[in-house]
Image (tube, rainbow, N blue to C red; front, side, top):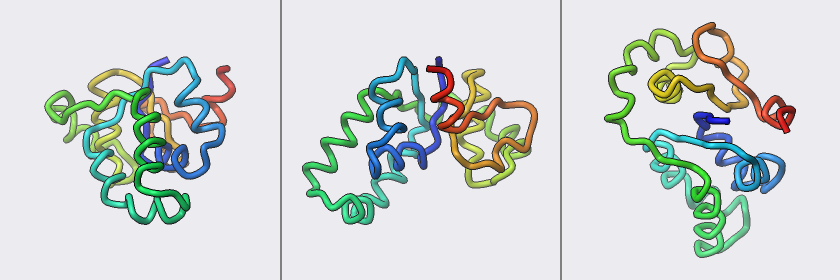
Length: 133
């Protein structure tokens, strides 16, 4: 199953190393993120490390393990869908995930309920993804 993954799902996997982490690392999923997701994680790296109570080396190890299972997609692959995504996305800060999903014609994995409030892009939460396995 191919999915665009919301940055918050990746952060959840980093912080809790729970079912979300298992789905990313062990699940039979083909996952994609827009390149800016890495910038978001990097911007909050110190806060995340503090919450995880790990060293920078440990943080990078866990992040890199997760990223082994996620393909980073450059903006050039989805920028032509950004205007449509901005009109469609219920939350303006998440339009990039919609642009990537539209470009690739695949669903989004997010736990933000309001992103389901549209009819063009399929949106799954973690519980729904778990139900597929």
